[in-house]
Structures are given as structure tokens and as C-alpha cells.
Image (tube, rainbow, N blue to C red; front, side, top):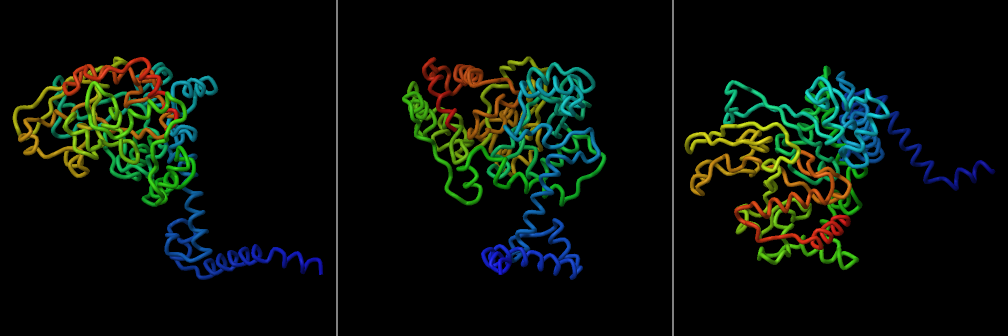
Length: 422
């Protein structure tokens, strides 16, 4: 009788366990490719009925996690997690130093993590940048080496917090259109794989990054990714936070007033796009998610400088000298397909050239920004103070602003206090 009542008291749980077991037996006995695949990863939980949908989703999630954290694809020992930590979605100089002291043979310090690709770790320990070697598109040549097919830049690692599920632009230069493309590019270039990942494996890596969990900075973003309401600017608790908030509200640009000046580029649900008040200032339509605030032009880290010739159908090539050309390193037709640039005939009407987009980079989201330093594509800002120093440079040197906006020490403290809330 004791056993009978024990089973009865856990009857719902027993039913679920039995149902799962029966479903598993049914799939195994059936032996059909579809049935086996449904449980062994190649499945779509949305078209499966319980409890198979749970089995499918859990199996895919488990394998996606393994591929992200442990799989090297026969390469140099790196995995996705080597450069994308669970805490921040990227890595910073302090983390690099701690890992080096713990294990100088850590896979992070191989290949493009080395100073020249072969030896030395000074750069990655000081700036947490890696060498990114990219093919030159057909409209860009090196002035001093016209036959060069590739060029190398020092760049930081974009965080995977919030972006995989909530952003439609990948990499600082927009060179990947999907998470699968991004994963494959990283496996090929950073991990130096000898085993080619299958389309299913790439799909599982992408799906894992879109699951609610480690890839979101807070619950609001997690709910938004699942169809919930978009996140809104927190009201701020202290007077400093409330003053800082005014820089991030959508407001007309009216210098020397500073309300909304950060929101000109950091607006929208993800705080990563131009708002309706941006066009009179920067010439960008609402929704644009790429821009230049003079990071390459300033070149704080003294990265190697190249002189490029940027061609188009309008006239003679335009000379651009910079340590990193930015999104112009990405195929022009691809940039057109996502609305990052406009056709040459429109540029001509605006009296612009393709070279106008030199040094443009993806505008990052500000959600979770307090945890994702260093900042900018070259990791040149190690903290909020250095980030705001860059904006001082931009406001002073932008032909559209020309010093009409000046951030006071109090402004900077207020902006920093507010960004801690995002």
C-alpha cells in the first residue's frame, strides 16, 4: 500500500516520465531517418508534439553548447569560447593577462593573437586585439602594393551579448550576413580548422547563441528576443543618472543644448541606430547602424597605417590613409543589400564618393555596455573615460558639429553614471 500511495502522489511526474520513455522507444523502434534525426539534432521542435519537441530542443541546445565551448574542428585548439567568455561575450586585457599568467600555452595566444602572427604577446595583453586578415574587395587597392590581395588590421573581438538574437548586423565591418557565416568565418580564420563544420553544426552554434541564457545582458533583452516588448531607457535613480539619461532620449539636435546628442546614433530598441533627428546633422537616414566617430582617424593605439585607393563608377580613385578602412573592406554589393550604403548614382547626386564610407563601422548596442570594455573596433577605449575622450575628439573635429557640443566634466560623470544602468 505504501508503494501504491507513493506512486499516486507523484502521478503527474510518473505520467511524464512514462510518456517520454514511450516516445523514445517509438522513435528507436521506428528506425526511420526522420525519427532518428528528430532526436539526434536535425529536428524542428516547432513541428513536433510533446514530448518529442522537448527532446529535440534539449538535444540541439546541448550539442550547440558543446560545439561553442569545446569543439576545435581539428584546429589550433581554439573554440568559440576562447575569445567569447561567458561573463562578457568577449575578452579584455585583464582577462588576457590572467589567462597568460595561468597558462602561457592557452590557445588564445596562438596564430592571430601573436604580435606578428608568429611570436610575441605584447599587443594582446595590452589591448586584447587580434590580427584580422581580410581580402581586398575589387574596388579597393593598396597604393604602395597594387598587387596585394589581402590586408591585416588589429581589431577587438565583438561581444556576443545580445547581438546574436537581437541584431541583424555581424562584425564591425558587416562582412557576415548570418550567424552561421560568422561562425564559419571564425572557425576558418581564428581556429585554423582542418575539419570542415557541417551546415547542421553551424546551425546549432547559431541556435545556441539565440537561446535565452548566457548571451543576454539582462532579462528585458531576453524577453524581447522571445517576442516581448522592446526594452526602454531606465528612468535613473540619482540626479546624476537622470541628467545622464537626457543625452540618450530622442530629441532634436539643437546645439549648444545637449539633450539627445548620444541618441542621434544610439537610438531604437537596441540603442544602435540613428533616429529621426539625425539626418540634419550627419546626413544619415533613420535606422542606419553604421557610422564613423573618428576612431581610425585618431588612431590612439598607433596601429599600422595604409594608403588605399577606393574606386567607383563616378571618377578617379580616391586616396584614403587609415589604419583600418572599416566596412569598405566588405563587398559593395553586400553593403547595398543591407542598406549600409547607397548606389553610385545616388552618391553622385549627393556629390559624394564611395570613399565617404571609409572608417565607418557598425554602431554597437549600448545594452550591457558596462561589462563589455574595451570599446570601439580597435579596443582603443579601455573604459568609459577613454570612450568619452573619443567623443570629445569627434565633436571637435566633425564638420557637422565643429565644436558646437562640448562635454563638461559633470556631463561626463552623468553619462557614465547612466551607462552603468544600461
